[in-house]
Amino acid sequence: MINQVNPFAALETLSRRRFLAGSGATLSAAAIALLARRPALAAGTPGSADDPQADTRILNTALGAELEAIAAYAVGAGSGLLQKPVLDLALQFQGHHKAHAEVLAQTVRKLGGTPVEARAHYPFPTETLKNQNDVLAFAAGLERGAVSAYLGAVPLFHERELAGAAASILGDEAMHWAVLRQALGQDPVPAAFMS
Amino acid sequence: MKSAALALLLAAVAALPSGSAAAPTGDPTHGEEIYARCVACHSLAYDRTGPRHCGLFGRRAGSVPGFGYSPAMARAAIVWNEKTLERFLASPATVVPGTTMGYAGIADPQERADLIAWLRLASRSAERCTP
Image (cartoon, rainbow over all chains, first blue to last red; front, top):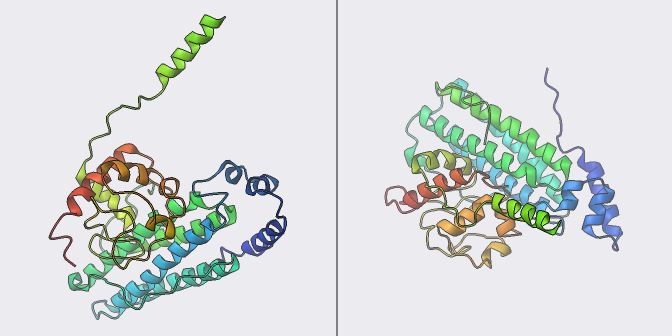
């Protein structure tokens, strides 16, 4: 039995901290970071301590990619190319991306930002999708890219809770990638490290 | 005492990496593998979460028509070439603070060179760049 968890639940306290920090107008961002015992933030992560919107931007970029993944799985599921067990898998993974998108949008709002919305149209290369393996390979490519995208985002978050939550999504994307590779007859875990 | 300090200083300077060291030669075949890291947000022929890469070299940053850039990227005074991509890919948020490209960067200079070598070829490919 796998328990359903909200990786962003810790943000309940984050929001309160941000509110308190915002009310202390005389404190510099570096001072707030030091008070919160966040030396990495105090030292200046690229993009950074003097930029309170940085975390929101990263989350919104991730949200945009998640919304595109939801649309991609909808294209795959609606293509008529997926056999029943694989179709179920695609719909399950799409459900995961919907859950990611929902929690990312909530978090952006919680941080005072405006979540990006799904586009009316995504230009997927549907003309190249001729059979089930084409759809699986397309999805696997997106999932592999998602692993790298989250891996590249984790070190940029100023708030460690956000980094942890993004890493939680990263783990799910990596599982998707491995399962899709397995379905394609490829080595599901081709390397010890991801980049 | 002064001469000892000077010797230490000279030794430290000598140990610093040379600023004129040649950039690694890129391997486009390996660069294509590295591009797999980018495809959650980018493609060659289409705008996605990030802008398309076809036509990248020689293009001013933030200038793909119709793409919704961050204000930071839209006003960045950068023209994409080997040198500017090398700097940007090492740490996008450092080169363009405020970019929506929430990606820490590619730390390995050889990997950056490989990716740039592949982008240089692929972004000019008529086959790959026809939507």
